[in-house]
Amino acid sequence: MTMIRSSLRAATSALAGFQTPDLDAQVLLAHTLDAKRVYLLANGELELGVTQLRRFTDLINRRAAGEPVAYIIGSKSFYDLELTVTPEVLIPRPETELLLEEALRLSAQMPTCQVADIGTGSGALAVTFAKHMPGSQVYATDISEKALRIARKNAKRHGVCIEFLQGDLAQPLVERGVSVDLLMANLPYIATEELDGLAVSKYEPAIALDGGGDGLTCIRHILGELPELCREGAWVLLEIGADQADKARRLVGETLNARCDVLQDYAGLDRIVRFQISAGL
Image (cartoon, rainbow, N blue to C red; front, side, top):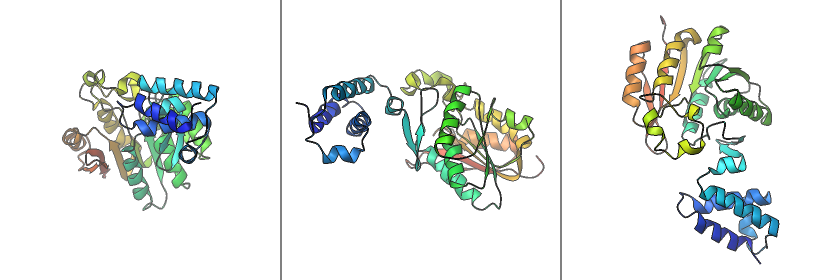
């Protein structure tokens, strides 16, 4: 006889090398039983069926091999929403919630707001923004049609209206003559030579991680597109790597003659570049 409590104990032991083995075990068992985590904690003496135990063991083995929990269960929490995720999209990170919070704060000061999320992936930023600012016009682009399919599913799941466009960075918006008041982007920012040494590269899509030689190729590209896309006074929020603040500041100054601020994430690391588009660009 295998009970919930003993199954969780064994699974936590099997995942001891990971950062949150107990949480991972609980999430995977809750997924197996189609239940909430609180149910597991309140019913530790209940017995698992043979099929349930076999399925749970399979999920634990996948996690033990390094597969992210979000891909195993097909879902990830972001801000206050649950989003569908697959290996076609980057798993949304808590640090990106800082970018969303700042976008919501800035847009609340605007009478109307047209917003672009460049490189939307799962749609985490675009969908959550649209959910909280239903009066805004939100555009989202991605070069990957597979990623856009996931983003559209998330928009439908949460009942928001977003115009999704396939293409490289801001190109599809520039081609349509779209002008925005706020631009958000969590673009690839890991240097190519660093990718192979990171666990994230084993399962998550390289196209969403590889930022070129110095990690700033995509950011350099989007900065060049901003004069055609952003209205005067528009705000721009770009996620960066923790060691890229000085280079990003220099790029913004050289490309747009703009001064930028760098916001730190919850771990105290440089994470978001924020600046405003001035007249005359």
